[in-house]
Image 1 (spheres, rainbow, N blue to C red):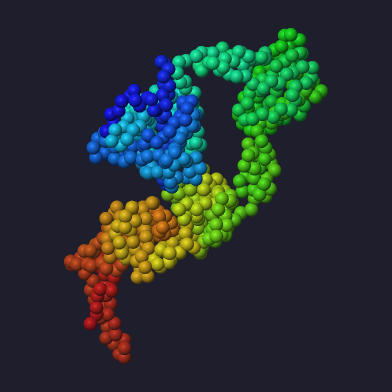
Image 2: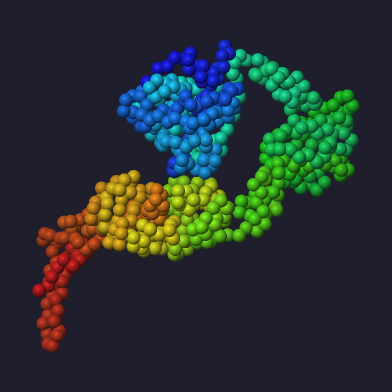
Amino acid sequence: MRSFSLLIAMAFLGFSSGIIAQCGLFISEYSESDGGNTKYLEIYNPTNEAVDLSQFAIAAVGNAPTTPGVHESWNTFSEGAMVNPGDVYVWANGQSDPIVLAETDQTGNAYFNGDDSYALVFGTEESYTFVDIIGNFEGDPGSGWEVAGVATATANHTLVRKSTVAQGIGYEWANSAGTNADDSEWIVYDANTWSYVGSHEFTGTCGAAVPGCTNSNATNYNEAANTDDGSCTFDNACNADGILVTTGSLYYDPANLSVEPGATVVWENVGGTHNANGTTNTITGESFGNPVDFFFSPVSASTGNEACIGSFTFDVPGVYNYDCSVGSHAQLGMVGTITVGTGGCTAPAAPNYNEAADYDDGSCLEVTTTAIAMIQEGQLTDTYTGQTVVTNGVITGVFGQLVSMQDGQGAYSGIWMYGPNVAVTVGDLVEVTGTVSEYNGLTQLASPSIVIQEQNSALPTAEVLSTAVVAASEEWEGVLVQVTGDVSNADIGFGEWGLDDSSGECRVDDRGYDAIGTGNVVAGSTWQVSGPLDYSYGNFKIQPRSEADALLYGCTSSGASNYNAGAGIDDGSCLFSGESCEIFFSEYSEGSSNNKYLEIYNPTASTVFLGQYLVG
């Protein structure tokens, strides 16, 4: 039941009572990952007071609701949950990526897949009002809801609310989703964009607008203003907000400046004719090699008649050198340096890696590679958990964001990685830098940075194992394996099925290929299955990559009466009937001693296996 008194609701939702703008909690971010269970909602508080979440909840429907307009699940917030002013509260799936979990305030039943609807509501399960919503409770949109003109944007995307939004839209999803990038309240990002979670940029206003200069660096800053009217003035000849460098008789002051990325530097000339040249070194004639070039033409000034040379915003970290290219000014020492950000070693695997560094200053020490077997065996005692390593191998399987690789044959030669920074394909020989982590018992390299060294490399041979070994062996995790057995369970659930070669059942999953969907996985049928060995929800399981990895035994001769179009390996069971398909004695001989024989001829176009025939 969603009816609720709006006047009563406003008293609790954190709305301000101004006559122009109102503010209240709203969903500031939504994410549904491409593979895996990284799914979350972020709730933002734009008000100037903390909001108690005890009277709020997340109501939801999955796919097509049983009763249109009525929620099917109800998720309350943890006891004592609060959202501070200007802060966010992240509600996420407990199996989300570590990047998201690091910002998560509460894990819960966040299992949406694009065509579900989740709402922030206020009240009780019996009587509540909608504060904000993704989708609606009226029906199934198909694969996902359209947002900002992007079809199925709620599937495999991250949605971030625009900074000007000050409150939720209640139940009016269409008003929030919009029809294009301009009229939507959302910015649609690619799947697995998690750089915005944990905070929200808010530029909206709450209450009546007060125009004025809102920049505290300006000479006419108005502390009471909440809407900038463009009237700000600054105490330099460029009338620009930035860090001032003055130029005079053959000098820059300061000549050596350190700033943070995103800072603006303003050059003001107080005497003579000067410029700022950050392109070609006037003395050597060679490029400065700055991260970004900048150049301002010469201007003249005198005492009391200062002139603006120009301003430049340094977004790219690094060291910038520049000089005055007027006459012989540079030769006479009119040079400057601007250091943007902090320099250091930015290679995560280097022993002197500096996580705080904004740019690489060339100080990295030599990186050593670690064999996959060393990582896997080390993880038996969590030796490498949280450490960044560099390893090499060939890609053996690609399952969306989950990728398997191997650096040889045998036990412990394979490993999984999640979320590669570049697209990879099976057969790519790669160098991987990633952080070792355990995801529900699966050893993996998180947030891997990949360099593709070669393509179409030979794959390791699949290790032929018994089904019992596959079902219980940590050492084969991530390794290409192969088993042959009979179907012991045609549908374990969640796309999994069981194979047994009489040694014990192992599981086959559908992450890369849905064999169950062919209709051929039936109890007692014999299969040969290959693929990298995965681990999830307490079980090892083989992940076939394609139809070629899941081969059914049966008759593959199209002329046979028992031909099986779904079979991939001939088991010698073919039966042939009819005149055109008969085999016959084509020659007989009875000679001296033991020189006796029969010759059998096959006039058909198919191979005939003789296992079903007898001579006697």
